[in-house]
Image 1 (spheres, rainbow, N blue to C red):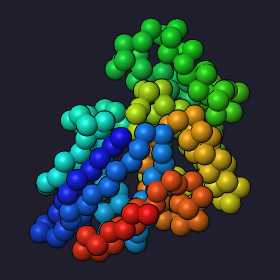
Image 2 (image 1 turned 90 degrees about the vertical axis):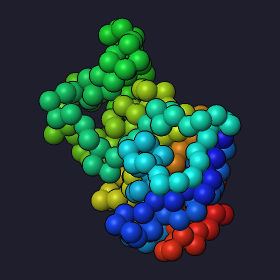
Image 3 (image 1 turned 60 degrees about the horizontal axis):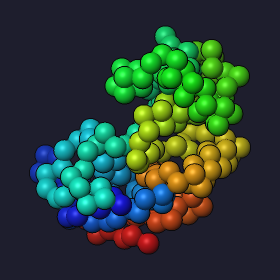
Image 4 (image 1 turned 180 degrees about the horizontal axis):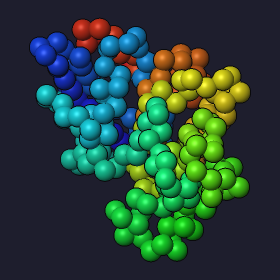
Length: 209
């Protein structure tokens, strides 16, 4: 279980997050909603280890939290343009997890098949639609076997059909036991996929439900 206690973060003397506490059970999905500027993306960046909190404690299963336990699907996907879909997925497992090329290729193909993207494995990002690039980004994050999979605005800029595909994908990963932490402006989507909805408000007055 991920536990966050009394987390605070400020920029230029302004409190972005103040005394925030919540918990996320293994296998559950939490969506984080709220207006712009209340700290949603900052919270994700702290969970992902890209920002440091000013104060507070984060633990995972009662142990000191290691941000390497998370995978992140960024809003702009951050795929390497000079690598194919398959190569985007295999790069980190080979470099970080020290997988052999064959093992990484096998894992990437399994993930692409799971996400219905195997026919596109040899294509480059510029040849893929927004929804297809997002699936490659999700597969790339899953290849690192994260305890928690984080998303930054996964439905933004997608048409209704693609939004439904993303919702189905997240629900399918949830059924497989993947813990997920999702930043979103889409309140309907947030309610559909979440076990918990965390609403961030200005001045640190936050609701978890």
